[in-house]
Length: 102
Image 1 (cartoon, rainbow, N blue to C red):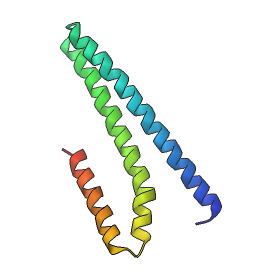
Image 2 (cartoon, helix red, strand yellow; image 1 turned 90 degrees about the vertical axis):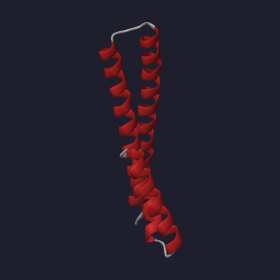
Image 3 (tube, rainbow, N blue to C red; image 1 turned 135 degrees about the horizontal axis):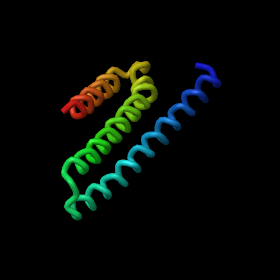
Image 4 (cartoon, rainbow, N blue to C red; image 1 turned 135 degrees about the vertical axis):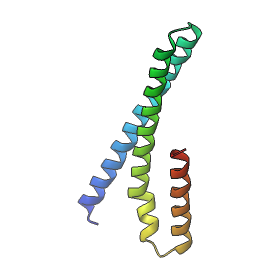
């Protein structure tokens, strides 16, 4: 991989992390709003809609982090000659994927 490709990959990685962080911050803000809505005894459907928005933001952030991990850490481990590291990374991906799909 050439320097230009490395820089492109690194820039994309940074953008993915920034987008994920924005999603986490939005989710955090919405969670506070949901707690306030509950305390004020707001309409249940309104609360559930806000809750679904948080779930969507968290899923999106997770997907961005996963994509970034697969394109960086995981790709590096798989291209190495270290079979133990390959197995460990594969198991980690499987574990997180199973948790995500629960």
